[in-house]
Length: 99
Length: 99
DNA sequence: GAGATCCATAGCATTGATGCTATGGGCTGG
DNA sequence: CCAGCCCATAGCATCAATGCTATGGATCTC
Image (cartoon, rainbow over all chains, first blue to last red; front, side, top):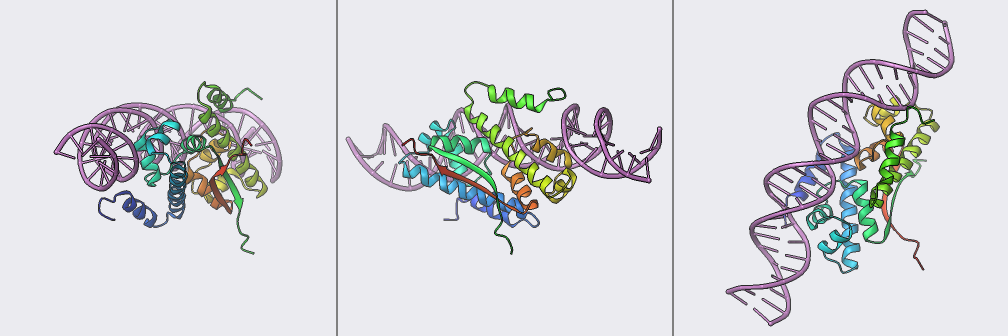
């Protein structure tokens, strides 16, 4: 499970860096998006290659992204959203009001 | 209005490029986010420098971003969100169902 | 008119995300 | 056993976003 690992490791180390709470968040968001895409993809019964093709990228890029290996750019997210027939939503939602 | 312009110009040209619908979208999202941040910032009565400082970046970066000069990264959006006491929301929302 | 503040841009270096190609391991079906 | 598909990674080139510094025009105040 944690043998060939590399990115999980990398990610963890990244999120552990001190004073980088924001980076941590970005990395976390990236990870979650990766998982979501993987779910959507599998739900459609597609292979990484198929999705990659549909989104105009390569299988390796998809794998990297799904694994949370990098923090994706809006351009890539947009392409993936299209391929998966979704709408990419980015917004600054109000905080839970610390009351 | 279209004198010193440069990015408006750049952006328009970008969005006009053929076969780059996705890029167009990303650029559009970037532009809208820029406006939103500007509104939030002004709403708080902050100067670009202040926001920049609060978000750990420079005034020039904020200006560039607000003007839609570049397609921001999740890391930057996250930092801005924090500074503005907001939550960055990124998601693949379902499409309006072509019904 | 001399400061001070604000925002728009420029120019340059650094860094990180993508794209691409290629390989390797795991499975499954002949 | 071999062929074929799937996914994980590596290595490398390129491009674009950021960071930083510095300048210029516009106000506004004293």
